Length: 413
Image (cartoon, rainbow, N blue to C red; front, side, top):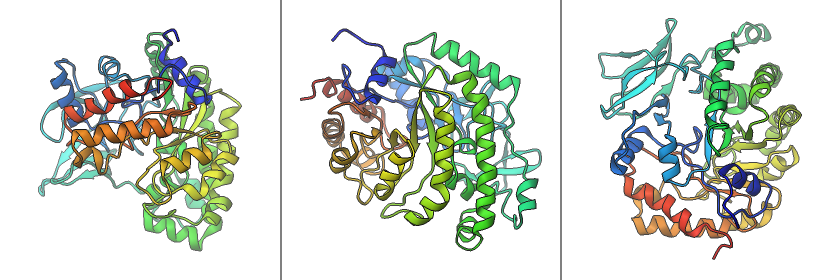
């Protein structure tokens, strides 16, 4: 087969056909990303000089440069909203200032990020006088503290909520610049990496209300929950209409994000999912598919096997991360059962166990096995199972992606 572009490679595989090789996603989203400390070590190891852009403050993720993406065989790049960090859209990605990684290394951070050091060694992020996130002195990450609906008891309280992410001319111009840079300037597939405020129903509710509070309301105050979810859907569709008017012709996949699964089971019952969340997801998907040919990608960790048929029913095309360590998520059986209807984006190597604790040989063995199991017939984009953590050294990272490039050529051995 003649060489094809990264964009074509991803498009072919998402249509359940075999391109020249398995496509690769290295760092193209907040759920297939790389910790900035690990990325900084990687670029130093490769002898590449670049400024580290810390774009997701909560998870401490770095924007990979095109040079590094190309070195690792990456086929996908991210295009998303101007403010992408969870419920902190004031951390806009078009203006940067000097900052520090959690190991003290220099980096660039969004200009709107104002970190305040506390006496106990913790660091807080505040905006307009409100506390949004906190990182303890021992932690590598920020915990979101902003729960503006924690005291919501009535529909009037829901109506009074002011969404923090209005659309602006500045955002539209930012997206048009990104399209010029990434679509017209490269052959990469563009992935629409949306923030929780626009692509989630359960997970964003757990953040805005507080986890226990929302779970209690889900059980005891269904009418209020459904009123809230309708307001959330209306907000999503308003933003999606504007976002897709700019990006729709250029993207190959667009992100939904809801962690319905825990390690051994769903977080909510299938009945609750089907009655409350599935109908809103269906409307979201129908709205999107009327405006773009992009495939619908859902990130949902954990044991979600019980609702995979529901995902197919409402038009979801791609499942991520395929957490193979969770109950009922064996990659062989999942591929055999659902591989004709769903593509899988992830599942490539376990970032909880194998990547941090296994040997380099263990990593290579697992990557080869996953490509062999998930790659046949297309419908597979290689990515790690969630983000590469800060303590992963360059040798292991390179072993992952060099192995995919070596063993991922079609026809697969």
